[in-house]
Image (cartoon, rainbow over all chains, first blue to last red; front, side, top):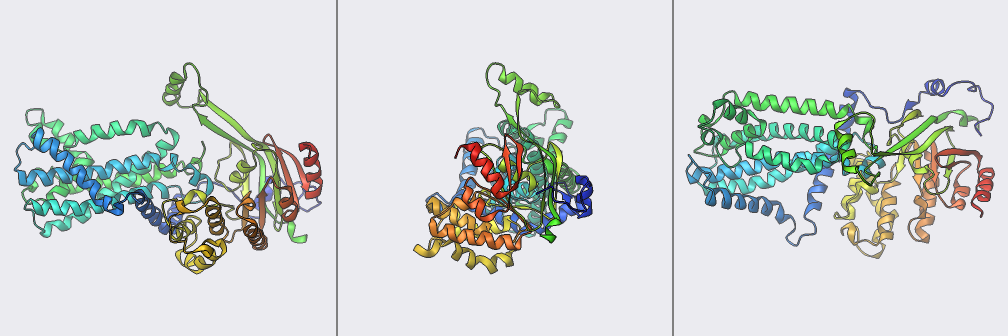
Length: 298
Length: 255
């Protein structure tokens, strides 16, 4: 049938495509157009994250109750080991230390699970990537959003713990919102970066738990960095305190806990928190977009 | 046939290569894997599967094109490349608008109710919430899921495989497409559902510019297609009118 006589005979494929306005299939759109596509898929991104969240516990007898029970048990385990056995609460009263620990665990888990979900976002959803057309960044962003919703459940536990240890709701609790927004942006950027790397090297899924655990112990989740490192050179504590995980944890503690004042925060803490968020979110998005047309190859 | 001179899909010397990690087993595979990660560039220890080798064709508006060939001959891979879902190794595919593969399997989640899956699947295909609300009832009716009680509010993992397949097809077929590609979708469901889906595919064909159909069922190819591409080992073996190509193909397969 292709040998039917036509005025188009003798044109090369590229010329023919240009004549009828055909575009290369699967080509990467420009950055602005890509963002527009993403915006068009915002309902899908939200629905996908909620679906993942619901599906997680749908086979359990207690069902969605686990959304709250899991973080609660998590906090309990850490309290048992670091609070009761190891006495890591140096320099803090019990009323401060327990909400301090629980906040640290929840805030760090938020970043940790976003990274882990990011690594598998493309590599673990190849079926979806190979079957349907959508901007691929939808997947890591959707997974980060799922973790944010998970954290909101954990916040319920956190509020109860805070009130239980004498930190009552006050004006500074409003600061929780900007901290969450900044940390979410940071996590999303990180998930995008990990998604691209994980799609090329799926082995990262095996490696990342160790990296994340190292990061957790270095970020002062269960101890105060300045107190713990008091007899070491000051620059070590400085570096650890300026790392994004520690920054977001400390800001959240400052907002939430009564006895945890601004003397525990490094200088320019809000600027650093905003800087990390902007840098990683924008950088991660561009980095992910650069390989858009290559996702889905085995 | 005058309007059929407007091309909608042009494939130009298209090559598709899959890369499979760790398929080369045996001694030294761990070191090979390590050097693969450390050394970027020419990958060692990665098996390449050359699935489509230099296929060229032009599809015109209003055509229904069947793709035939034995298992593993590259038919599904070719469809995915046309849809822009698999990157080309060499060569190019030009298309008019966004071709879509008929299928939402991968977007659906077994732990969610049929109801939520209809919405999720629709959103995954790029429909808006309003479009889904409008078509929701017709999707459910078409699937026939509710004929035996209120199954749509149960999780999909409780469905029989036939019911799940029917729901998947109903969701996928709810959207209108410019260039539509169907991968053996006709074989799902019981007899009455097959009739209904064949009718729906004819409808989609009328609305779509061009239809591609992959099937091992020569009868459904004969019923729906007027042109057939025959792929064998990733190469285009024959391209022509349905009867001509099917006659050769049946001779080849010894039917």
